Amino acid sequence: MLQVVAHYAAIQALNAQVIAISFGTPYWANVWLQETTAPFPLLLDPQREAYQAYGLQSSVFRSWAPKNLWYYVKAVAQGRELLGKRGDPHQLGGDFIIDWQGIVRLTHPSNDPTDRPSLPKLLTALRKHGG
Figure 1 (cartoon, rainbow, N blue to C red):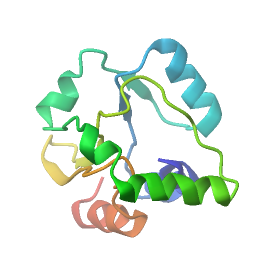
Figure 2: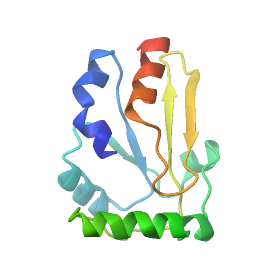
Figure 3: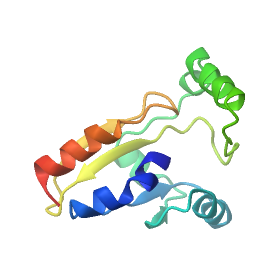
Figure 4: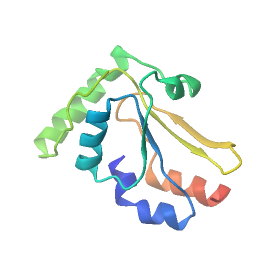
């Protein structure tokens, strides 16, 4: 999500809007907004209806697989700040591009907590399908 925050102007230039959805509490949503300085709306979905509608899974195995543990070890070694455990650490996220007609143009359900589409992939999909 931080790469999206950093390149938000490029996304807006394509006449697109970013909306984040979280199952967290209002308290943690505000903490997240402050920590990330995200300039876009954050919607709360405590019943995870959007997660279910888009087929986003929860997985203990994929959340704590060696690949992810190694990612966190490297992040700590590089001095990157980890945002910590907030809510259900096993709930996997995803990234989706939905056009103004409601047509889903890109789906990327995460295979693990670190699995996100690259910014170039997101920008290409936005350019292709317009805002």
